[in-house]
Length: 218
Ligand code: ATP
Ligand code: ATP
Ligand code: CA
Image (spheres, rainbow, N blue to C red):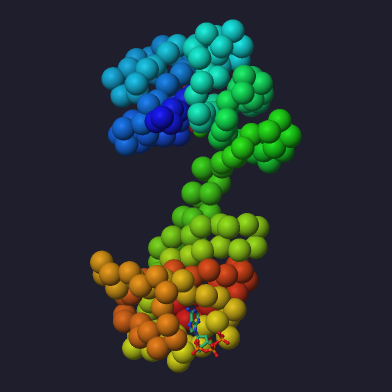
């Protein structure tokens, strides 16, 4: 059986999820209380409905209990976001992802059992900040409060050197998990792997170690 998705709140974030899921051929039920928003998604989603997601009866009648994964993308109205999540949980939706507005919102969502809580603006802000600090940092993914994965463009200091020459693990405690040479990607680079200028290194490690690595080698 194909998985089905529900997207509640068709702002920029929810709308973008809805478009992408639909583009990938997924079955998506889109919901918003705003008629204009819903009309925008009539041709895109499998189904688009006008409803207030804090209305328990409406969620029941729309069959939300049979949807495998619901994304709650209500931004400003934290009260509505929390109540919607609670109702979906009670209806027995298997997986619920919620966009959080702030840390208090996150805490409440954790308590009521949201499976996944996302902070798109905060996370994107952090990623962009890292690429502003160093134009060689192409991407940045936070694994926890202390650990991250970064994608770094090799500069002059790494050119022609091997991982052993640079002694990355021993000096910085970070691991190079992959090296991209143009279209090729080596997903388990050995110590004798030579880095060319502008290769892209994917590095995993503690933030403080990655930061030392960036200062000394990037
Ligand atoms: P963006 O993703 O554009 O940043 P946002 O985070 O600012 O959006 P809002 O504009 O507050 O989020 O809400 C997103 C959408 O959720 C809006 O289209 C709004 O109409 C819808 N929405 C808000 N409350 C409800 C509700 N109770 N039921 C259904 N839809 C709702
Ligand atoms: P280690 O004890 O750190 O595993 P090793 O003695 O087994 O190293 P090699 O595997 O030959 O030695 O690697 C030599 C050095 O090259 C390592 O100590 C490490 O600093 C660096 N190195 C090798 N592979 C990587 C990698 N994937 N990421 C980061 N550093 C690496
Ligand atoms: Ca917003």
